[in-house]
Length: 263
Image (tube, rainbow, N blue to C red):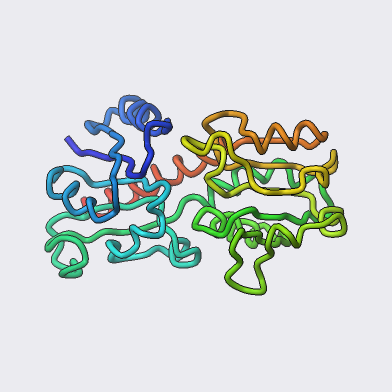
């Protein structure tokens, strides 16, 4: 039986196991999907050693960037955002990069968050003539959102608590003049999830109004503190469930394509 799974910390909030195990059953595939909570990304070596039938993984926070040191081949989307959320493990490979993770194993890395976010945001775009977006966060998820917006020809600015370049704003840069020219506010931080469920981005929420569409990539809980603050000021709000489903479907297609290629 082939195995698939999710690595991250925490992973108890994930819907992925039920989702993919249902897909396997519906398609008559002899496989299973489990969640694996890792304390650090270096435990991936042990995970693959201990599970020789493990051939596919989803990667969630905080490992989307850290996992790249164990990836032999990056897809263009993963290369573009320098983050990986889906991997395929090819065993007994003669082309394996010795010393990357295990001899005889080639790890392929892909990013399906880009396609997932496109799935989520596209229905909202028709509301605005020339939409502009503000992305909260600067990590792997934020870069995937940015890549999707570029593909959709949506202008954006990125915000971070610790900007690393002049192109990234700090939260103190956000004022009424900026917000009056923004249509989408996208929270791509982990705030609102798990042990951070009582936290929200340090925005001046009085600047949010009914003209804004506010999207939180967190899907559990279904309504975050960020979403509640935005909704209270008349904004349209949405969580990340549709993105999650979109990226999961893209992961499924990636695994199926890779599996067929070597069979």
